[in-house]
Amino acid sequence: MTGPICARSKGSFAQVNCFDRSLAMLRSGRIHTGGLITHRFPLERYGDALGALASDPTCLKAVVMPGGSPARDPGAA
Image 1 (cartoon, rainbow, N blue to C red):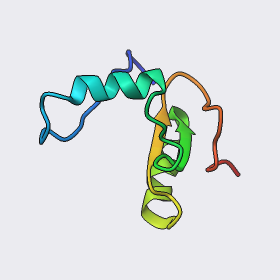
Image 2: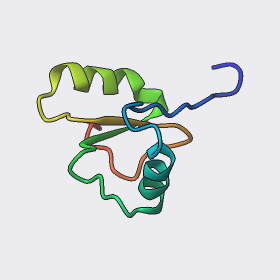
Image 3: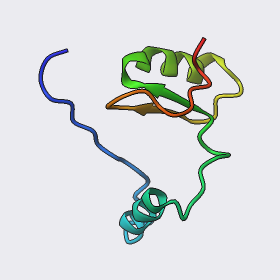
């Protein structure tokens, strides 16, 4: 890999006035994502994350974590 990694957060623009507040609540832990995020993968395994989304019916939302291994990785073999 060469060069810096840039991350961008995107969401729905249906509610343009609350996106920043929603991100702040997610970051602070006020919103619990336990039932929404079902799989976490380190950046090096982004291909596995895409595969899980395509073929694993239990994968509702896969998060790719830049900067190291996630604390919980149900996609790990």
